[in-house]
Length: 335
Image (cartoon, rainbow, N blue to C red; front, side, top):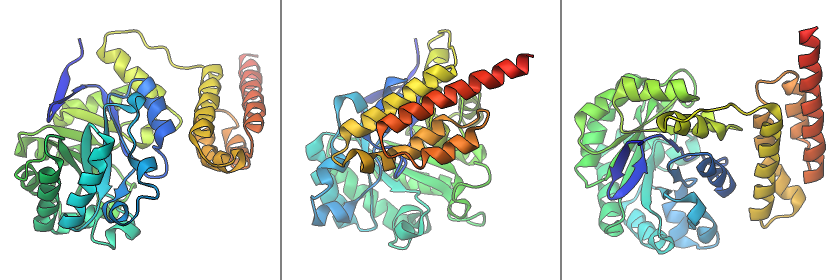
């Protein structure tokens, strides 16, 4: 039986969770990853101030469906009063957990004093978390952050202790600094230091792409749960691989036919959940189609063609061509 981790009363399988990724991990993506074994999902980040001023997209961003649970809604902001009000609004959608983003490195978030900018202001980060915890009541609040602002200010352990003292139920640490963005390598030593510094559960994130790197994250950091972000691009199968191993079950990697079938099902899900026209929804599906083709013979040319897709039927034809190319290539290799 797989071990579990308890986050403020929300019990999760100790396998691998899906990281929040703006512009990527939408509802279709979360549903796919949950189906393949992700133990937990987090929404794309939502502006706390934005949902306080306008509810135009609030329902779309904050609705939690049964297929995505257990799920957190992630908020970002730099003002405690807006965070508290936003939490009150989000609670109407009954998320299992509310997560606060204090790790996003992109300038448009950092320049507002939110995201990883809060790592330079522990007092404000604490005040924001405390306001959220108070507003959330019995719903657990978690915080996601990085190792530090830059290599000269690695303060994740100190930051984690301050966040723990506000009543947060768990923390997620990505082992890169803000100035690394997504380059270089994640530092598991920082996550290990955080785990030693606090008593609440610690979720480790950064450079987990398969079963071996997941196990390595658990072993090197002692974290309570592993979170996967970019390693899941076009690869919901990574969660099945990890879940199978922890359950003592045999795992069979997908062949090219299964990969393309899942890619097409993912696209159908995007189309069915979108309120946009098929052509506009396909714009959102293009990058996902391209990711499913990564690592195969001739994939560069086909990925380029993915970014021209404007209908589902075009995706079907492209997937059939891609399968045929792989079979021809494999046949030639055997000669």
